[in-house]
Length: 465
Image 1 (cartoon, rainbow, N blue to C red):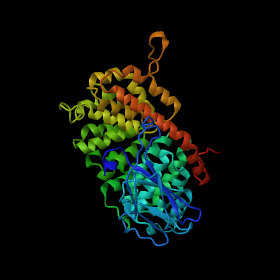
Image 2 (tube, one colour):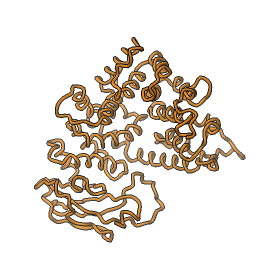
Image 3 (spheres, rainbow, N blue to C red):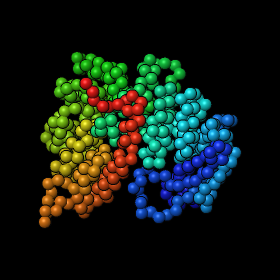
């Protein structure tokens, strides 16, 4: 247990099968999601790893006791009781071991073929594992996105919530990184094609859709609407319009779907829809309903309305902070800070407007720091919200400096240099820089792969007339 309790992280086990498939070389290394993480760390990370595995020839996912242990002293080991190369193998049965698994490309292709042909041949927990491992390995740069996207096609026929839970965990990063790129239209079409069958079945109340978690059901609607599923968008706009026609009758939108459907209606609507949401926010007493409207108002496509919304959240007078139910408490994270943070985070989460939050934060930094106790937690929340989507070299330069702030000799200081002595800011700013560097590296290695795959599979974003 010392290898698990006295060192950081966990391993990724890489399985490379021989040409005939009957043997495999297995090695381990520490899994890092960002390639720039701890790049100066020279510690040799190794674990005692319990290996379990089965194969297509005689699939048995119940044998979760280790068949062999990989020692922390071993660089690699050989497993020799595997089937021929036309049969898949899968390691870490029911994900009982705390590690990720990567395979050679041929074995990934065999697993993908099985999932597309009959996904029930693989245990549901291992299906969730395959999606989760593939998405995270690709994000880390150790698996091509072409493999991940091929595998993800099987999700059209998947209805188990364990698998969709891992899918919903992986989607936000892809969505954020691609949101302001030319391929986003194609990506939305592809994602909507995966979500469509599940959303339709949930709406029909079809038997055989064993989704019992309210959180999963909420996310089905959230992502279906987000990716433009016609049925979800039409339902959201219809119910919101119905509410606008008779506000006092109460919202006809199901409580669990309000955040997603309000956002969709505000996004697809104009000033009238936004103003109605703003009026209802002030009229409604229920704090959960107010929070759902607060997030939805950030979904407007109008840049000027977005900036006015941020201004109302952070400034005095007839502002959102005057209606903060937690106002006056001693905890700054549950007091006046709660609503401004939520508005900033919600606006930043809209792909078309995340740059506005960075502009606002830079322009209003002195005012913001005068309003709130600038702890490391607050600074991290502000900077993470505004820079999480940054993934270009130009944006990296913006993180490192604030345009217009000129100091002696005409040199422009970086954000980190300028604010490093402020309480809690130095560490948070450094994290923002490192996060952006990781995002830039991800774009360099992954964007063209994804663009090529989407085009090859009929999800091109190329404009034509």
